[in-house]
Length: 192
Ligand code: ADP
Image (tube, rainbow, N blue to C red; front, side):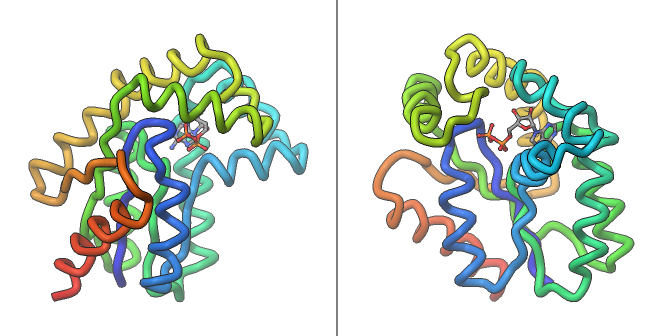
């Protein structure tokens, strides 16, 4: 199995780059943001509860997202591997992921950290909000709150995986194709 975490702040390009990586390496995509939005669309209790956090730009409680990821992995246990996009977003989520992967006799191979400065991110998210209709992309104060959540709760994950020697930095500004090549070169290193 090959398991990759695509890491970075909101708007860094994780969704865009995941698509290319999935196709190239034959992996399954786990985007907790997509899973949560699907729950909301179906009107499940979980979806409606999560919506309160998402609309405010806050993180959804760990237990909710960890449960979703666990279900997804169990349902796709015969996959060649996974790309985790938007998960883990807190240290407890990262620890839970390690345990889950161990249960499946595997591990995280590499964490690809897309780095983009905040002004560029705000521009991208406001632009995305115009076409996607995502409420959490439309309002600048909600976007700023998401960055605050990212800095406080998500960024510590960078040192968690750096200590394990799994974190690599990729500049997330430039041509999509060029960024993709950079990401692939790091993935290919894991396959050697
Ligand atoms: P982006 O990376 O552009 O912010 P996502 O679609 O990944 O967008 O996430 C949208 C929202 O869903 C987040 O702001 C958060 O409220 C919630 N969410 C997604 N993944 C997680 C997670 N792993 N833990 C907690 N909340 C999450």
